[in-house]
Figure 1 (cartoon, one colour):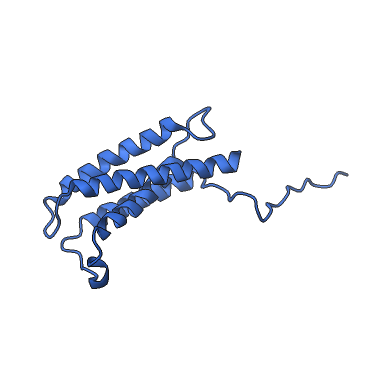
Figure 2: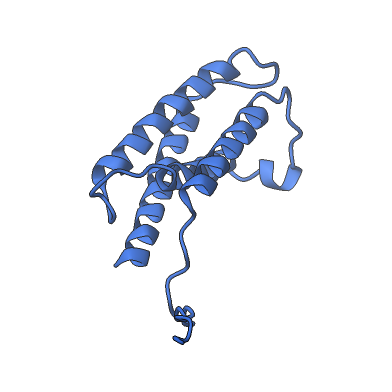
Length: 143
């Protein structure tokens, strides 16, 4: 009788496992819902310490959309594109640029909110950074 095959356990320096396709898609949808909810919130409270930092809100946009860019990249699988895919990065960034711009237009009608081109730019830059990070992580795992 043969002994059952034992798969090697990942070592201390092994790259972490990447999100499964289903988990990434679920997380991307949940995060998108969170983004929409946050930007639909009329007159959000200000944090006095943080509100005094110039352009702090741009950093918040960059971070929030960076997470979405990461999750969207992880939720897209294209045959033959296991490693870095510039086309996939561009697709994610393009989609997030449209989403960010539409979101800024949407905020025009929300009391206490304003429409700012700089926010849409920060959204797009965040998506670029997030999708590049996801691509790098994906390449590490498969490389």
